[in-house]
Structure formats: structure tokens, C-alpha cells
Amino acid sequence: MDKLSLNTLGQHLQALRLERGWSLSQLANEAGIAKSNLCRLEQGNGNPTIDTIWRLAVQLNVPFGTLVAPISVPLGEDGVQVRLIDQGKDSPQVDAYWMRCAPHTLRHAEAHTPGTRESLTLISGWLEAGPEGATTQLTPGNTVTFPADQPHLYRTQAAEATLIMTITYGAEGQTS
Image (cartoon, rainbow, N blue to C red; front, side, top):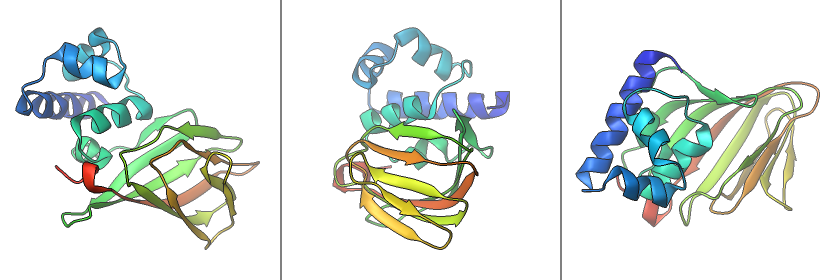
């Protein structure tokens, strides 16, 4: 992530934390990250993982898109890139993302807020995705919807996969 995006994310994260009257220690403990990492992130330093941003969003009770909305570059790690396309304003809140997974990627995603669902439409490549132990194989044009409030995964084979992902938040993830 570039320096401008890191600064923007850090300022936004700090504002959300302070709105709630939380200390750095409180948010870091709840999100399961080191206080020093959270401090660096709020200062526009570090290199947060997608999982770290998800943990912070869950603890702040905001959609992932609320944290990344000000960032215009794709977020990426371990062969996965994600970019917010649009963030819904209605209830339930629905966020849309462009996502690309490199060849031979296996990404395990943590559970999102209760009631959250993901819908994936594959644009190109091949993808296996869904709750761990109940995945679906997708080819271009296929769509799958699954509960994302449990651990789930994304797996590619020899070619990269490009997809559109929509996340529909349950009652606890609707505040922004």
C-alpha cells in the first residue's frame, strides 16, 4: 500500500476508535493485534494485512468497506488483491469488491460479523470458495453465495481467478 493510502487508513482508523472513546490498548486487545502495530498503523506506517483490517473492522463494528473506502489502490497479500468498488448506504449494507487471486493461492478467511453473507461471481479462471468443508467450485459466469460469519476459503489452481465479491452484512455489521 502506498504512503498516502496508509496515512488515509491510519487517520480513518484513529477517528473511528476515538469516536468510540477507546484507547489503543482496548482496540488492539479486542482485535488480537499488538498495540505497537495498531499505533504504527494509525500513524500511517506498517503494512497491514487484509486479516488485520478485517479484525479491526469487526471490533469497531463497521463493514470492512468503511475502513478501506478512502483507499483507491487494491489491498493485497499472499496472492490476493481486493479493491472496494462501491459501498451501499441502505440496510442491509452491501459492499461490492473486485478481487483477484494469483495461481495456486489458498486463502483462509476468518469469520466476519454475525449474519454476514458473501456472493462471488467468477469473471475468469477457476475458483473453489465457501465455508471450510463446504466449498463450491466456480467457472466463469458461476455465482455462489455462502454464510461468511464462519471461517471460509478461496483456492485457485494453475490460473489466476478474477471475481466480483459482494458482502451483505448482518445486523451487527451495518453501522458505519
